[in-house]
Length: 218
Image 1 (cartoon, one colour):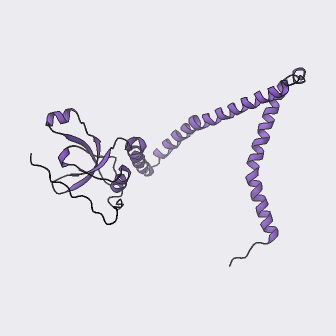
Image 2 (cartoon, rainbow, N blue to C red):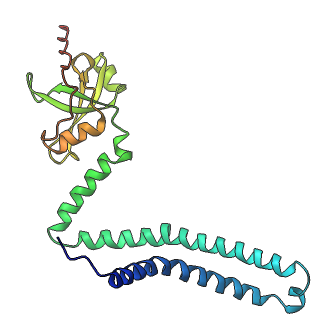
Image 3 (cartoon, rainbow, N blue to C red):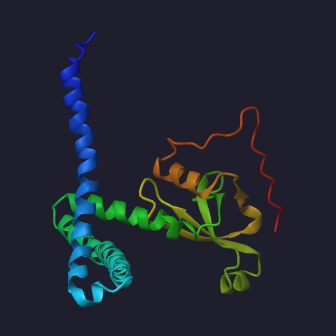
């Protein structure tokens, strides 16, 4: 067993740990009181001596300080944060070798992030690139407009991504009767695509997926 620290050493460790946790709070309170005191010094003594005026001024100064601190936090988050992100993005793009990987990952995040993922309504299987071979795709539109009118049939727009880089793929207009809908979520479908089939969403034990219904002859 490792040697237990002596009681004085344990006490010192606990003391300095508590001091490190308390120091930011103390500094914050000290700075806040100093700034409020500075605002209070602006008020002439003749007015401060009047009943209630000094207290009202301190309350007003405190409210102004809270608003200024919140404004500073907002500016640092939305202005300075975006600036630093742009600088970091430009720096990484200029690194040979790393830029290619970075651009690929960024495209994947943009495509399959919350905004890009909302374009996919469901996960499906379609026979592609030939009959008897099934590919995983995402339905992007069930009313493709002119394509459906020209084909005179109910067709769905299905995006079939490539593996393991799903930012490229094929846009197919497939007859509704030839589409096999899956119960897995869009997120699980993305994992299946990006992993090249290594990450398969679990299917409830003891159950089998429904057999596909043969398409009716045209």
